[in-house]
Length: 364
Ligand SMILES: Nc1ncnc2c1ncn2[C@@H]1O[C@H](COP(=O)(O)OP(=O)(O)OP(=O)(O)O)[C@@H](O)[C@H]1O
Ligand SMILES: [Mg+2]
Image (cartoon, helix red, strand yellow):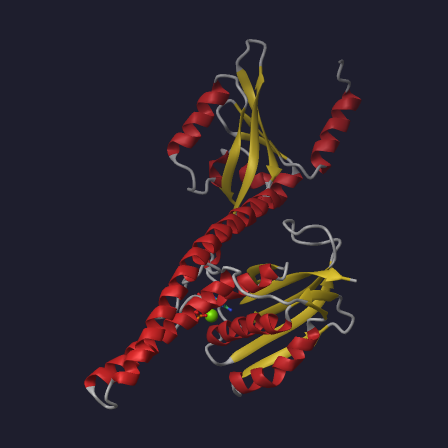
């Protein structure tokens, strides 16, 4: 096809206006063109990057061999594609699917390299959520096996100790030790019971209800629990869709989330509880299409560190000092939410503070 000055102008205008990013380098790798979309994604203006190499975007996330293999491929005149994590001007990282196509001269050697990227933030988020749900599934199975057998063993231990206790002289060393063993065994049994909630091995009798009702019932209890220095604000949507949930279990989940928030704000700060309707548009990508009644709790604490976020729902994961937390709170919440066909997400508010969002499918 003959390219006229007019088509060339149209091409340029399209490239300048598209939301896809374009970067072109010469054969040495010096940047000779970036389009406005590129400037927007990276934060670098074209003046800042022209004449430099794309190395200024280097994140340090890839080993040297990664770049070596890439260069070998494109210098040989072949296309390269893969995922690259780069660093924006403001220091934050982003990961893209990138394709580099050599533009060959008459001699068949690369003269320019055209770098196109594809935004995969959504895919990455989906992948992470899939990994998370697979992990929770296998942990759930493990917990289910262990808790079941362990619970049976504990029942035997507790039953036998109670019989032994009857035979012992009150106040004797044996009796004191027996009551200590009984106390520990019962504590273990209550731990196991919580684990069974996570493993979804317990009765669930859902009823059609609005989340606002169990939340209102909790209000008084929460005010007492939280003390003067922690304020709870409620914003409950009066036209909230109904959901099929077990109210008592939902309350237990909320309690666990509130206690975590209280710990996070270090006994002084704010907790926000919200309900609202969501969907069909604007849902997190991993949610099945539909409408949802949403419960959200956020706090003014420091938030959840990025490296901790993938583990918080794991049974026995805790960042609290020994003897303070068992790490079963959020795994219990996760068990309750999934057993009630809900979905839970944890993230941080832009201004700090953790935010937990729970979606329950709306029912008519
Ligand atoms: N609101 C929050 N803000 C910051 N970090 C949180 C918040 N909620 C939970 N976390 C983190 O998640 C971890 C796991 O929470 P989880 O409720 O499962 O266990 P725990 O609170 O440590 O112990 P337990 O609830 O068994 O007493 C916490 O140790 C904490 O690091
Ligand atoms: Mg907790």
